[in-house]
Amino acid sequence: MQKNLVNSKKCITFVLLNQLNIKVMKVINEKKFAYFKYESVQSSKYRLGDIVIKESEQVPEIGVILQIHDENEYRTDMFGNCSCDEIRLANIEEIKKYRPELIPEILKE
Image (cartoon, rainbow, N blue to C red; front, side, top):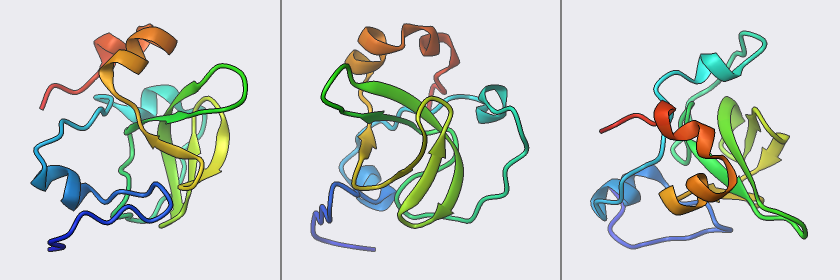
């Protein structure tokens, strides 16, 4: 387990999030948001179903992780493939503001 908070290019591992007792936003069933059956690998940064935000020059976009290509590359339902440099975990306020239809889909851990 890592002891120090390491934020390498906005990629925070779930181990660190759990140590800090931060509730992770995740949908109950990520397959509900996919059109295909994607093959994925494991990642220590994000999990399938995690709700992430991509902040752009216009309006931020909220997406659900559907596929993990490798530690740094992911596919979401709203903005396709992205790197960990482009996304971070969304918080409940951001989800309510930019994609409120996900609220009933959030896993209650």
